[in-house]
Amino acid sequence: MDTPVTPGFFTKPEHPFGDEFITLRTFTLSDSDDIVALCQDPEIPRWTTVPTPYGVNDARTWLNAQVAQWAGGLEASFAISETSTGALMGSVGLFRDLADPTTSEIGYWVGAAFRRRGVATRAVTLLCDWGARVAQLQRMRLVTLIGNHASEAVAKNAGFRRVGEVLDYRSERRPETSSHVTVWQQQYPAN
Figure 1 (cartoon, rainbow, N blue to C red):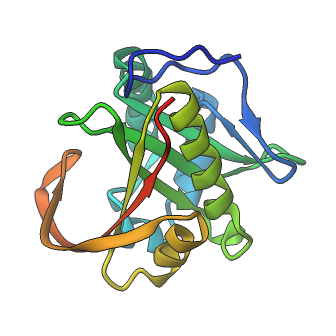
Figure 2: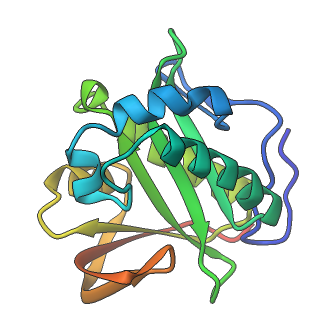
């Protein structure tokens, strides 16, 4: 059982969690080749902060950074795996809002072979529920680039409500890049 902690801080779960179709688990270094293969899809860097080109050194650097992020409690990144096979399908994570410990931004990507099957919606829903329960989050924010209709559908299907647009959005993870985005939000009751 996950133990609640200081609001907005994440503690690595002892066990994977999920449903009959997907499982969320922490990444391991053995995921590097699968991450590289999935990130060759040009749609992933088009709509996310994943760089291109993306090689094995990029994957290993990112995987090693996840250890530090978990230790700091500010980010919670999970592998999205197919429950029946264990195949890596994508990534989903929560990123604590430094100004408000009850709010986190959620980000995700799903490999091309696993899209249009509800994987992203399931992963977002599972992770938001986990964040509300374990980290006592009250608001989840999801940011989609203008024109990313698939992610807009995920936001709607996962219960997020559109709250506006930002013409000059700069994420804390990539402040040098300005984007035109739609901002979505979901509220959770205080624990």
